[in-house]
Length: 394
Image (cartoon, rainbow, N blue to C red; front, top):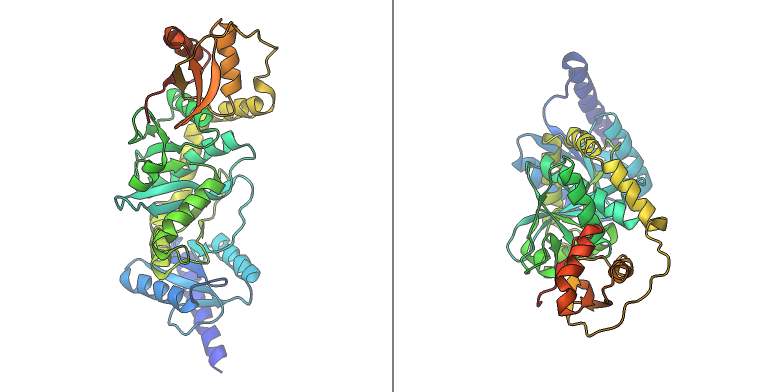
């Protein structure tokens, strides 16, 4: 009898929603944020309380639970397994029953990756980690270039129209920097962050993660996932994620769901933060923002630049053998070169009669040249398209 009454309440609620949509063309009342509860490792009761608290404190959204039945006044949809919860969640999103959903252990299609939201440990600043799960592209350089766009989309949907973009100092960072600067020069405006470390430009160091130097921190999804986990669980010793708002919404050019990910180890506060994050993305019309930004970036040559990056990854810089100039003492470093390009850059200098050796400095790969060849070496590399400068002390 209780189950029948419960089912009637749900159906009544849905029919009321549908009638309002048919009559006015829009949804009535509050934004609906779904939350699946399967897989929770910190106690479902804590996630339910986070949902109840968020709903009670809001005047424009409410949380809908999807999963095993709970003792709560929130609207619920039962699902016997995580797989069923995901299917139900997707159906509800696609039919407009809910506006966004927060879940765990969710697989996005290729081309879609999630942008997380973190509160930095050093200064309590909000920073978007682009990206933290999913795969935006198969090759690393194009993937990170798209990740930058994904982060910008989320930041703009959250109300930041000019987010500062920084690129974490990982493999392909320099390649991505070059691509983003080309897109910027061709009309898609990007505001680049400046590292707190001297002479690093928009390439972010570990210090910048703690300080929250950029608004959008670009990296590959695996690194972003690790960054999120370390920051989120730092205060608990790694057991529970207590900081941040989860791994965020999946973004992709043709992806039209606001499907967000949190960790199974998320604490109550993180779940509350994720719910508010989801509600703000709905208010900010994330899907429309994504369509607009993709169109603008494509108009600025994004497609051609990504194609060129793929070509360079596959065969772009194969060179015939180059004669090595006569050796000489090398005491000055040229930096700003990606690890994947350092050998090609060294051969560029050799072809111009400049002796150089490759090495590794504290900010990444360097080419070592003599003092009298330093300025000429930088000039020749810039002419070949490298964004280089003299290495300074760390």
